[in-house]
Amino acid sequence: MILEDDPFIASDLQTILEDEGHEIVGIFGSLAETYEHLEDDFDYALLDVDVVGGKSFGVANALAERRIPFAFVSASQPGDLPHSLRDVAFIPKPFEERAILQSIDETSPRSYSC
Image (cartoon, rainbow, N blue to C red; front, side):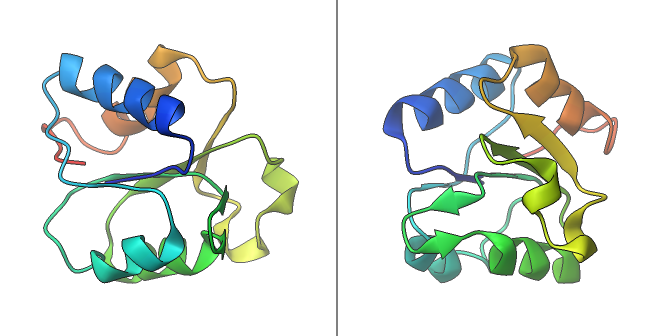
């Protein structure tokens, strides 16, 4: 799953992941849309911090409760994260392709649907 409100960045993330054989099960541009799909079947998520509707911290907490690994991909600062989420992978924008792929590879050797 990808939560990113900039369509160009979302498209870049999608291309990076699909080129590596990952299946994208949802690309969402707002918190409301994301909350509608949190129960969908996916194995990994990339979250922008500041999106349409606010900050993605509630989504992050819901993913953590479901034990679904995720990373933040954001222009925000890691120190802007709530203390409970500061151990989560944080990839600063502008991001490098290898950082995105490494965040997924570090969580498991298996292929993910995002």
